[in-house]
Length: 245
Image (tube, rainbow, N blue to C red; front, top):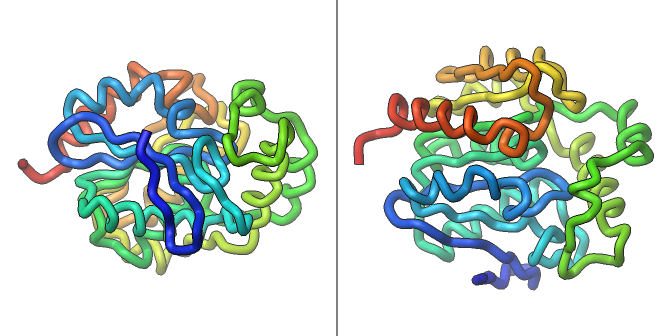
């Protein structure tokens, strides 16, 4: 798999597959590009050139200065796209990756033609940091290998750093979201234990071209829990909302 050396010395590992217009996939905190998207990426790669990075400190990517957080994720994505010389026709992002892409698009609203944000947060909540960083975590995420990690408990360090950034760096106000005028699909499950449906509803309403998808009976990991339904919805969304090309 290719990797890019970033200006701060971190190595960003990414997959690049398929042909056609570029689709960027951004995974969630403590996940990897392979794990989060493995059940939907093959179908997407039949239609797009799919670029799937591992966020810094995750999977095959390094984070020597422990900078992981929403601002660093945004910078890394910009550096990656500039290095590849591409502009994605759409971005699909999950969880903290989705929140980070929403924040990036508030600053760079024309960097893509459409966004799908799955299970995003709108702002951090300091009262929830303790329960999040000390509570249970999905077994599939705990089992993942992070090549540049700090041992078998690296996921704990990632979780702590991301929770800190969630509180200190994330604030998606109505005024900021109004800058994102591209078609944006906000997706969630109605059984999501991380963010209630009301967060997705509020985001979709605040976005000028926002749309909402709520999957009944689904939790947080839509791309793993309900991949076939998600692909069907994505296909329809892209058919309706992407420019011809």
